[in-house]
Length: 181
Image (cartoon, rainbow, N blue to C red; front, side, top):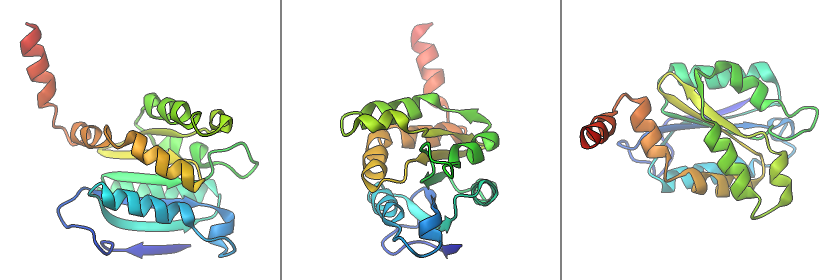
């Protein structure tokens, strides 16, 4: 398992924190380059995130669950996984992450599949999901580099608000109620 700790080059100290987990037997063994993790890092940095950590693990439920759970417990605001969302026998990332979630965000998975259909009919085979563990937003993306970039850009407009809500800042709810009263 490889891991990189500390802020990424070019990250700002003031941005929200993110961690990236690539679940791939080939990447973990060093046989295949981690293109999806590299793309996730680039897009998150463009969106103003500070990369707190990243890792590559094999497609093993326990390894995925351990890393995602540890990052959430450490207070990282966004945990992004890539890989293991298909129907292959070793694709187990949703099974690893789902039991950790306090609340699932089904709209994220639905939106990812819907937008993915613009690129490929195979998007319906993705089992991408998202949810929260405490104040941490967890997004499970496919392993395709194109799907990672497209998925992050699709969800980008909603991520800051989701993080705000998970941090307990729900002031918008009070103002909406006040206008409706």
